[in-house]
Image (cartoon, rainbow, N blue to C red; front, top):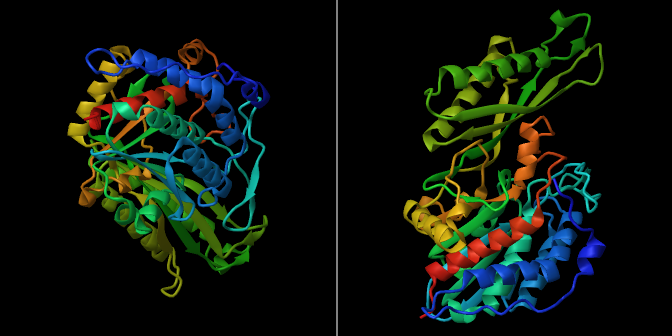
Length: 449
């Protein structure tokens, strides 16, 4: 994958004015001119901003410096800003006459990952987590692309006020990686304080999608996700005398094995579902049977009924496996669902409309038919929950040059996945295409009167 300019080189770029954006004779926006203007803005302004965000990632709910910089950027663009919504969340309101209220959201948190991407602007940041421990931090999921694009979108929509009419609610959301930030902002009165949107929009840069491509579902876009913690108590003993205790490592191992029967024997075969045990910890010495084993699971589904079925089955198997191996009634296996987000659905009518807009305004070749390739999840689902009645549209923007996919098919290195320490995307095409797609969507949903 091509490496991009260093921070110093990016900052040294010319700050020449962006090309003027004109309207065609039929009052339709000249999207070729918009493309040129957005790309010029990236080269002159957004490129060093992206490098700054990439080199200074922050953990979920601790994005204090990122939030402050985003608030500054939105204010300087001409947006009215409120900080501290749902913790570190930022809300920017841009009013421009009569018309719909459109929410545009970007998430801003990084991950506790050591960056090994080889980029010359790679993160070396560390941060104290909410648990008081120090962690390496990396933008291993592309949220730096999202917030940079949000700034670019705001700058262009302010500049092109004659081309649309309505109000934009810019959301800079914390803690997407812990699927808690959207819920926290709503609990802090987001819609009561700033208005319930007529539409909600967001995008994610995708390492497994070629640059220059956009894809979006007309229905389910992302799976549900739940984090489940299982604590398996034991009775400690000498490793040479296992009969004298109750071994939590063995019991927890049986639980891990038993959980796999849920997918293979309880879930309807045509229903996607995943139960992954991502963490298993117990003990401290070769010859000591410990008194506690702890498991951490991620659970995914494409249907809310299946989601509930999985969580119920996990608890049943875990608790009863403990009983089957002799744990006393006053030492039960504990199962706690700590974090979760529902399935993310695109509103079918809105998705059909905006997928058509992408094809029309950005080119037929830009749009790629959606195909779910994994069971990633998104807490954008909270903003567009069925009971709120806000139609949502979430799309993916390509982040990896086609050449990298071609090389991988010919025996070269695989394209790194999200959350990998090797993760990297091409920022310029990701930021600029995401920005152009947002502008096109706003112009279609909120045309100038």
